Length: 435
Image (cartoon, rainbow, N blue to C red; front, side):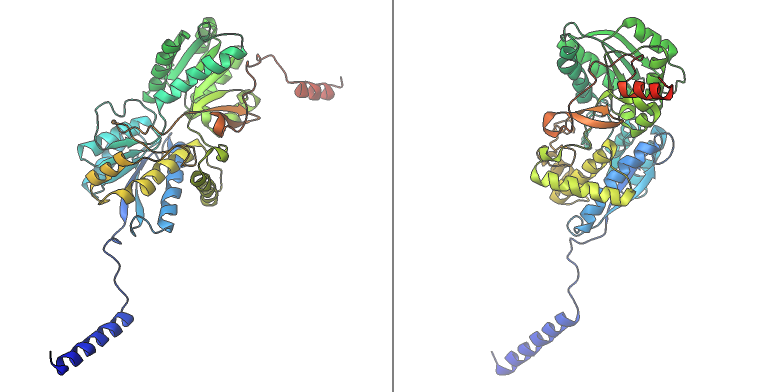
């Protein structure tokens, strides 16, 4: 090798070194364009309140992941698709996939929307990730690309009946075999799924179902329904309703002097803060089986406890309000996808790679802010989730079970009858009357 060649090589290397200082390296191949996720939620219409609430939780998850570098250096980005009903969900899902080429859709809070959008996604072999819909029919057609993180009708219905049989019954001098329950439900996919689960669990535990009365959530008169309930004389009422019909049901029960020893709802209307505003003092004592929300964080794993605090702080900063159960479900659904699945996929643009990462995920319970984890069964349903028992106390819903995340103990079992006036109110009334 000649001396002149060596000199030329040294000069060339020096030039390369200088160039590297003048021109910073290009981003790695992994830091590509944003990963776009379709947000199929009801942002308008009668379901918009909870649709937006659910999306707000999911959005906090996306912002947290993006603030920490995204997925392999790629930012996450929503493509919002307002889907107030099943028909719109169908067309919006088709648009997101066929026109925008999205590989991941997430939704939706509402069962009819979830069923419609997931069927479109499955037809195109696109991932559909559900965070909040409760229908038990989501997996009826054995989809391959549909996953649900949240609790749903069957475990919630099971929890409601089990609580009635195991906790309420002894407090009112009954056993599971002597307990009488009545079931009412809105007659859509949500209410029907929960009621069917409750009936099956009651049969399993030997609980007597003395009435089962479905109704339309659009009804504006529940007098006839309540009179039938009153005639059946149940110890416990199991009710699955949206906010307007839940409010109407309880108000009609008061007007007809019908109050069983316990009322146990299932999410939706019975879990909304609006119920407390609508019913006032009458809301206290009502129980419900629902997704966990404000829990005792000491029942979480250390990482889950830290995530719990971070989520609440960021949600309040972003929205100006406290998160509720739907916000927690939205966050947990999105965070599980963005943090525990997409980074593990060989190619986050390949739906089969995303599916493989989802199937392999195994996040223990207590890892997310509501106490859940992530482990899918063969259908696509998360098994590391559970229904919490919540009771309205002093005008607010608080968790009373399971014990490791409970914030209070159950009270007002049995419920006093409608004629009962609390002593502090009676005293105040006496003062006003000069007695």
